[in-house]
Length: 354
Image (cartoon, rainbow, N blue to C red):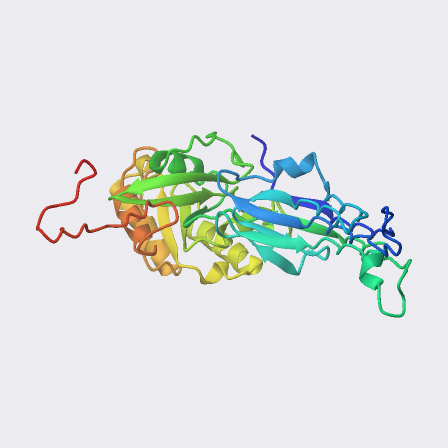
């Protein structure tokens, strides 16, 4: 499935139906009077967040969304039919932005969340509503209020509890494959990961979502490499796991590069809790791993977790630290409700077979 996290679409709500001009024409009724009904209301444009979607790829093939207009008013005081709302399904985590790409119009963070983005026009009045004591046969009517139109940007920010960051080839894909059910592509070359991926981690009876984004390089905030485009997908994370490759010529400098790019991006990423993981310790002895860990601590890391994404060594301690930054229940964890059955007055438990 192709991944798309930005799209521009056109919205137009339905116009209201015109009111009718009509007069009663019935036998034995000398003065029938006006009986033109009002027009129906135009359809709204409604966004709804649905579970199970994690891409905006559908909006590559459909960019124009137009709701139906309301029905015409008719004689015998019949109101025109109101048009149905046009509901647009978007993934959870989608933001709707104005055309300037700065103003956030809606932010969908929960499944089932609905927002009326563009309201349909009201139906026009029929001539029956214009009847007065001095105007017994009005021919006035309204055409109905026109619908609204709007260009908006959709921007997807994946909802994850923890996020992976690091330089290319730091071992992020191997890491997420080790701890979750993800099958991310792994290769011995830079930028193996080209789009973000999500995995569900289960550890010590806890469950949380982990996001992997493409690697950052120096100057990513200025567009180098893949740039910082995908950093938006970890803005909602509660904690970041920063992987540092032990086989790098200078792990401390590698850590500083990523830290500087997170700070340059802003959006609060440099303020999030970060766990430094010295990866690929299976390629070095214990003495060398401890030496590099000391260098990372001297460079500003509070805690360093020596791990191996390939063998799983050290993963338990790191996952324990991640869980320490999570709430009591994450979005993916099942919420159970305990119910107590009160005994009957005679002391016997109720049964549907009684």
